[in-house]
Image (cartoon, rainbow, N blue to C red):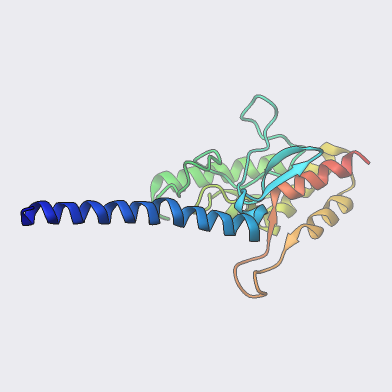
Length: 199
């Protein structure tokens, strides 16, 4: 066998071994460990409500009136998402803070959020009018949840105090006590709100 053929054969053997190890054995081992140690996370952190899958606590979703693109006043609304919360289309809009398109979009969104929630423009927090870096963030700030309390309470026939208490109960602290910001998971909050309206 000539040297070129021997070299080619060695390269093909290495390719086959590496394909089996890194393309089959390693993924199977990692999947097995994940399923054994963290089954909930490994399967997407799905949230089940009344016997059906309601979503994932890691991926945001819209809360619109059925069959429309209009936000439903009965529910807490998430931050905007240019991908429509499609987990296959994550990523930011890539517009800089001084981009005229972003400035125009944020100003228009600010007016809409203020009108929808019946609050002054100055009370609208940043996350109510800007998307997250991933475009699928399931959380909003406590400030954004707070400006929605009166609207949600009125639409559901509840007192503002009961809805405010619900928001407080679902406000998550900083990771490890100092990383990130306080946040509210919209899916978990809205499911708790649904339970409250049925009692």
